[in-house]
Image 1: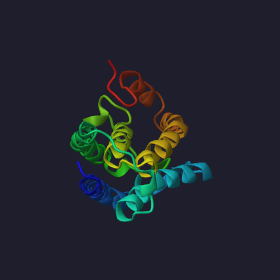
Image 2: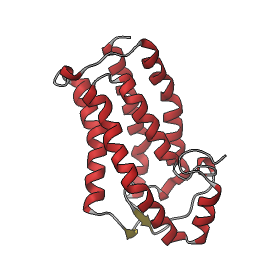
Image 3: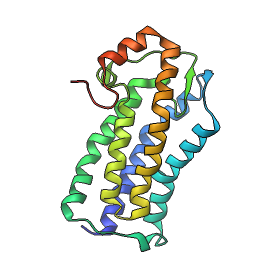
Image 4: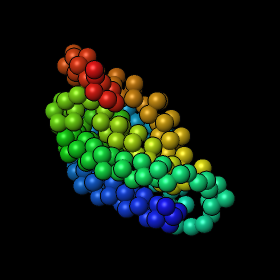
Length: 193
């Protein structure tokens, strides 16, 4: 499969994620923050994730500047990347839809924050993170470039591992035993067996 075709496919995927998230970004700004746990580290981690999942991939797609770091995978790897797109987009969409006004890109609790335990949150505590892990798996399969392809894995991986425990502690502070019970019956990224 040609590099150009894979770039176009990833670009369409990237634009689709923007369309999915856009209405939730607008709506969440209307809901007052009551517990803001954003730190300098949090902002830096979010900026890194944006760099690895948006800026560097778009730089690679729209310019030749990163072509020195290209690699080539077998066609079956690109096909796997393409096949991951529908479940990734679906889970990304459902996670936002089920959270509604509770969604936030940062560690913060909003005034009308509810504990969501239905929909995709019934069995998984962090399905949006699951969708983003799928995203950063498909990214190097489609963008076959050491910088643009792997940057999402590096930067989001750091964000995830430094953030998820803090996020769960924030939810315990907000919801107490209700959240602890929820943690006991759900998996963090995949349903509990």
